[in-house]
Image (cartoon, rainbow, N blue to C red; front, side, top):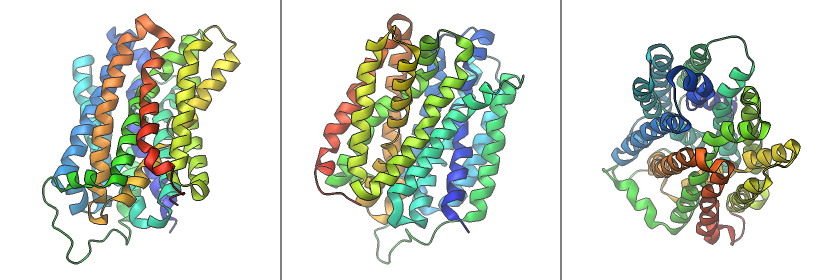
Length: 386
């Protein structure tokens, strides 16, 4: 049975729930009289749910107490239900925030547990395999924009419901697959006590990887949230937003796969460092290109979209290798929780300042990749790790 393609497809379908509301952003702003900062609130409701969910999984050890496949399947079903409720029951920002928060809670059992599933099946190929997994998360993030771009005449509710159907399919795939033979608890391993995951930060290699990831997360989700606004300004026509947004976010999947390929030779740490440096360069340049030809703006945005997420799987691979196998699920979930908390701050800051700063708010994202590059230096300066 082709294990990795099954996990990859399930991740694609399951994580399509994440930005399903953003794909309907234009319609929601008109129907509910929302501002760009309100769209940031919708995104942050998902982030907050995800953070609390991952903290729960990691600090209690639940991510390592039960089979990852069962947690993934159950959470994908719950996420599909919450997303459908958002489409069918929400009638304004307040109710929408509740449903999007519930989607985030459910995604806490999909994204990090999907990473654990990969490590449990192909631990020796963790970097390239996780590159495919995060690539599918990226494509899943872009998918609602792609569905919207098809302009089938569907309402925004129908566009959102597509993600629920895909998440249910993901649950079925993973429930049938089950867990891999690796990451089995060793005899004599310490019991999974509350908060044991915190000890992972005592390992210098885990700490370097985690801090690099935190810098990366300051930029990533805020960038994805801003993409429709950035490409709308560059194109000069709101009707063209869905197609370019799908391309800019979706090309990140190719960036992940390409990074996974090069990690076999360069190592995960050096690939992550290269991606951080590239996205930082695009972040610094883009506001300076105001008034430039559309093709140049599009080129920089595509490079930025490819590089901004290409490092993500390698932080997970580096962290998974640096901590004891019996707490891999908890450690990855905890790392995710802190990273997504950081992303909430950058999303709130950039969407609130967008009306005044427009493209200039991109500079607010720049400290993330720069500080991430510095934090990761102990790992990328040594010989390749894989």
